[in-house]
Length: 143
Image (tube, rainbow, N blue to C red; front, side):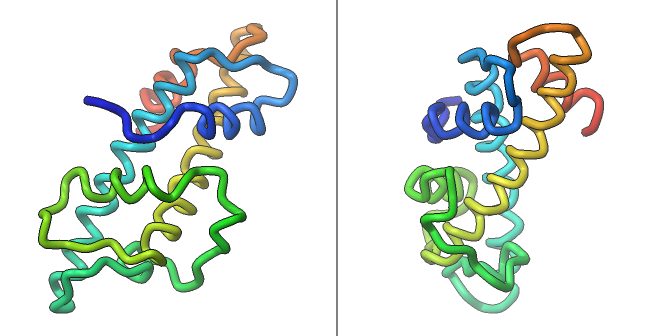
């Protein structure tokens, strides 16, 4: 599976949560993959909600978001989030701008939670670098 999300913003999210720890490129790549998979799943659920309402355009409310944050407050870029949203939904659906921003916000929170836990796991292992195995361990433990 190709990853739509650039690794640099994901790396930034991990660094923000890792404090003094370094971040391996593999950790950023692994988290980007997980974000993409989670985002695609959320979009499928949102498409089902839109269909139930007789719409073909996904809106922020379809993602359970009532108030959309400002686009400039996000670390994750919105264009790749749009591509992620479309990975597993039918081409007949459109993804509204507010829905893209809402999904980016949800995925950024998701990434922050994972990155924080991965940093804790790296510290517990007495390492100075957050590695892909820390991301994988998080999912093995908590999903």
